[in-house]
Length: 385
Ligand SMILES: Nc1ncnc2c1ncn2[C@@H]1O[C@H](COP(=O)(O)OP(=O)(O)O)[C@@H](O)[C@H]1O
Ligand SMILES: [Mg+2]
Image (tube, rainbow, N blue to C red):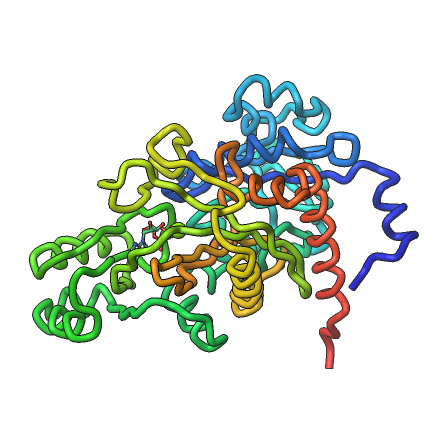
């Protein structure tokens, strides 16, 4: 649903207050802080007023005045003092749609209405649909995928099932529950050997940034790999090892998504087996992100088409990044979709849009519009029978 000219003008007449939530109860807490920094730096301050909201690793929601302190001094200076308020009491968004605001939990009653929330959180309790559920309850428009797409994009088992349903090419995989592993390791090992064989790749179903991910080449390394993944999740994914280039593609939009030019991770040190957490986000390691990826025009088209199909397969909205493997024989496989891709200064997503002709400031602007659009679309639904 498009906004009418009048609606757009009235929105633009005042600055929209955007709650940027970052940090979070996730292994990717630090990456989220870096992503939030990039978003706050790039957001158009003539249109938007940012209210920073930080969630600690323990799950406390810090008031804007305290949240701002987690950001570098130069980023803090770009925030409006009025939006920060003075209170340092912990805050909350409550699921009552009549509030649509950020409220303090202490005696000092302070309330800040929020027009839109931008959850800049990666991983659990941020990218997985939990926070999205709260925002849907609160009836606050928010950037990115809704509850369903977020949780489907987070769980690699469900994600792959939806990709398969959409006829997207994916690698051979099998999965197991931690409880099965606890009960009968020999049985699980037999099943995995038969379904996948060696070498294989083991990962927790619900984590990101390569945490708990490892490669297994024989029975003993498979036991170690499953033990490791089982520390992070009750569901474990085992995949055939794919030897391929890693290509990524940004997607934005709601019902009619648009795909960016794809980018590619180039690993300089060939002995590096896969990009781990620190490497991906260091920006100084032995890998480099190149846009556009060094592939033919027809492969670019194919990737963009597949990225949009993957996006729709999980019912995504707002933004996502779809990751591919390009095998030496030219075969493309979809590896995964990330519903809240890294938005740091070294991340692929902003770079891919920049190369496509949409600077990050403009991308954020569009994401906010998509959030409002999606919220209105939902509000059209009848709720009484
Ligand atoms: N089946 C596979 N074969 C080879 N390498 C893989 C495979 N799956 C993942 N990888 C490597 O591990 C990295 C992390 O895995 P991925 O599925 O992207 O999970 P996440 O990014 O959510 O941790 C990938 O970027 C890739 O380098
Ligand atoms: Mg990945």
